[in-house]
Length: 255
Image (cartoon, rainbow, N blue to C red; front, side):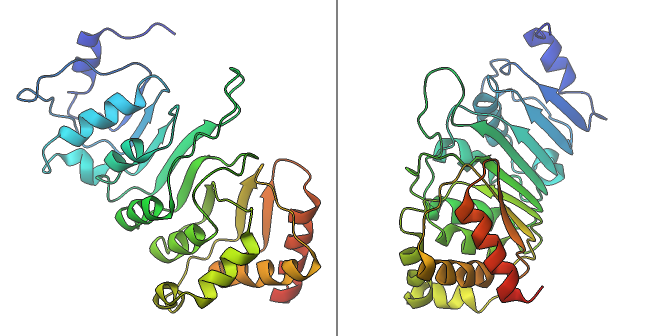
């Protein structure tokens, strides 16, 4: 694929009837006083080498810019999912589909977890994007080093009531204790009284899980409390504990 020149990209994003756009390279270098009149796009796909710079540019657009309200689908990749990456996305309040297709095991020898958000960061993101139906924040890995806990799932479920598909990193090192904290912590009581999304399946990918027999009951009940319509947790590897947890969830829900 031959990359477009800066002049070609500038021409492309000024087309008034453009609604769907895929860009692999970085944006032209626009001075603050001469930002382009980006049309009201509904779908935008950004390549790995372009995402951060394009998001920074779009964040600089005037609040009256049509693309802030019109964008429904944003698909992109990034070396790291951190606050500098997630913050600009919050301007697209009507997003229905946010797909950050990042794998921590990229095959380049760097096997560190790329997910750098915490529960508070996830809260800010989903509160801004309450219309989401599809949310993929990278492909959860096996590192178990992320700062997010299972509590972030409750935050997502409450603030994105229309959600149908979800994948997000969350640390399972002490998932039993984290779920007990949700039940006991007064900060979560108000959230637990509110409606939650009807997510049928949680995509856990390579998220590790190791719990004892007593823990299964706590985790299964906790997951149903977060996602009342949950039927199973699906991963890309045969993890017997996720399989057993899915079976326990089905038993508890009586389906």
